[in-house]
Length: 80
Image 1 (cartoon, rainbow, N blue to C red):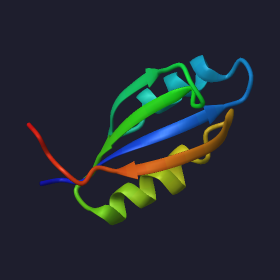
Image 2: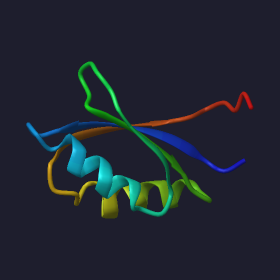
Image 3: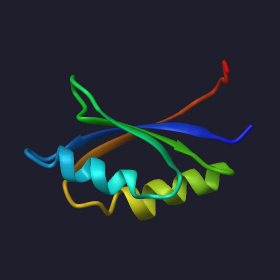
Image 4: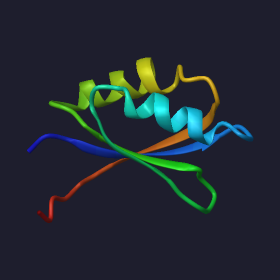
């Protein structure tokens, strides 16, 4: 089973749309949803291993202009 993670993303004011588009263009991002609540976006990551998840978040997600903060939640069960 490949690792899956949920990235909870807080964006700067007026940046949600541009951040969502940038995320959608990254390899390894399975879905991107704008949401209500304390976070602005939830992105789902799938990767071949845990190191790849970490590299994607650190090297690609964190460098997107407009992202203020992220929380990465690793999925621990597969109900499919």
